[in-house]
Amino acid sequence: MNSPVSIGIIGGSGLYDMAELADREERVIKTPFGEPSAPYVVATLRGRRVAFLARHGHGHRLLPSELNFRANIYGFKVLGAEWILSASAVGSLREDYRPQDIVVPNQFFDRTRGRVSTFFGDGLVAHVGFAHPFCQPLSKIAMDAATKAGASVHWGGTYVCMEGPQFSTVAESESYRREGFDIIGMTNLQEAKLAREAEICYTTLALVTDYDCWHPSHDSVTVEMIVANLMSNAKTAQQVIANAVEKLPIERSCECARALATAIITRPEAIPAATKEKLRPIVGKYLT
Image 1 (cartoon, rainbow, N blue to C red):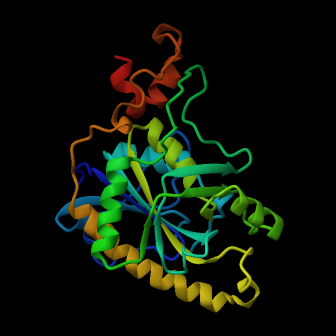
Image 2: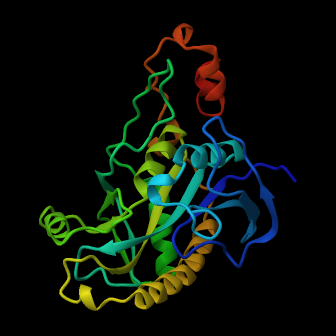
C-alpha cells in the first residue's frame, strides 16, 4: 500500500509507538540528506492515514544533536504530509507548569550550536518567514485535543531549544527564567524550521517531565521519577494526538501552506540542475 498520508506524527522521549495505530506498514524512505531516524510506520488512526516516526530511533539510540532533521522532515514531505504533530519531553521553567502537564508553545529561543536547519544552499537561496514558528490552527487543534483528553494543558509560551545532551547549569536555568522563557528541550526547533520550508504545518505537544535545575526540589528528582513521568506523559500524548488527528484535515489557510511562495531568491535559470532535482518534492511547484 503506497497511498499518500497527510498527517505526520513525531514521537519523542518515551513515545516510541502508538497502540491505537492499525493496518500498519513500515515505509523506508531514502532521502538526499541521508537516513531518517527510523522507518516510518504508516497506519490508520481514528480513520485517517498517518505516518509515525520515532524521533530518536528504535531503542532511543540518537542524541538530539545526532538527529538527521532534514531527512526526517523530507521523508514526511515525500509521504505527502501536510500536518505534523510532534511530542517532546521538556523541563519546566515555571512553577505553574508542573510535571505531567502539557504545554502547546508558540515561540522558540535558539540555544543550539551549528545544527543544520535548512534544506537550501548548493545554489538555491530561500528565506522563509519564521516570526510565528508554530502553525496557529494546528496548535489550536492540539490544545482542544489535550483539553478533551483531560490533560492539564497550557496555551503558549517560549520553548528554549538547547544543544545538550547535558542539561542546563543553574546559572543558565535562572537566566532563562529572568528572560521570561517557559520550557526547555533539545529537539523541536530544527523540526519546525524545516517543516516551514517544506510548507508543512507543525506544532508541538511539550510534555513536562520535571522542573529544570532552578527549582529548589531539583536535587531530589530521581531517574525513576523522570521515567515515571515520561511513561505517564506518553500515555496521555497518545490520547491527545488521536483526538487531534480526528479533527484533521482542515483548510490550510495558514502561512505554513505558502511559506515558499515569495521566499525563493535565486533566479530559476541560475539554480543547478542537481539541486533542483534534490529539492523537487519541496520546491517543484515553484520551479516548473
